[in-house]
Image (cartoon, rainbow, N blue to C red; front, side):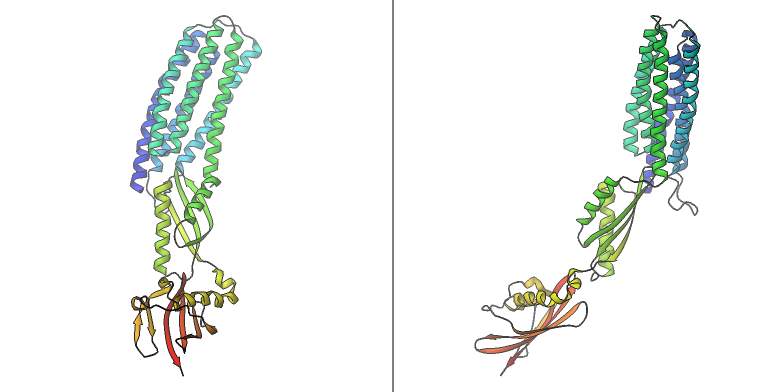
Length: 398
């Protein structure tokens, strides 16, 4: 899986490079035409594209560093660099957005009247078409490569396409001497810059501070709870490194399970989460569950009484362990398969006496009547997740 994720990040670099070249060309065109046509909104859109260049360069650098394998100083790898790059991008966007807003407000206060050429409107429309196409490409590429950094860049592409449409509308209105609309739209575009910067900032800080979606925790908890041998999910702690999800899971299992059985169950948990939810790494810790019969120690005897009655009347062969043996009154020994061939009338247990040898073992002594004879029984029960009868000895009373 590790090699696959590294290849995913390398694939995501294509989208960042494409965006960089597109923004370089569009920003040059927009700023040049803005100076020629005196359009404040087109100038603001051009500066917006400059922030996008810097942002995508940061994303590209982050993707390249994130592809470095884990080392002694970075046990979990360099995945978080992708989030750091996004955080740097948000800071750049905030700064450029502030200066664009400052210039626009200054122009409004000075009330400078300038004629606006309609050519800028066509530039905006062309830019919107280009950016929307790049948005579709990067969105699909981000989905394939599972790159949160590239997905943020794709959202920014869509924001730029909308901004360019707004720019075209503003320039069209300003060409009819409605200059205030041009400047108003410049403010609107600046707000777009701030909003995109804030969204990227919030997402990056959430990831870097080990924030995690609680809804995903609930989904993982439900999924793990349905895995055999898991008694309960005590807690799950999640964090993200770039687009990779790391989970610490603590589950409760029966203390009767062997180390091998518990380990096999943890492997099932890891495989399920990786296959169904694309979780990158899972650390599963197992704790012994408090069994219900241990909480109600006084009622164990009644539980075993019901189970022993089923064995006595051969109603449930699954209660016999695989190594079950029974010494008959005549001294012969039978195994589980032979015991299953027996047929009895409805036999009742009398003078039932349980004796708990350990947490996992109970010996019961009783007798029953059959064919005018009294038969004494000693039966050994042992718990392995559930109770099984290990051995029985029958003695005929005179």
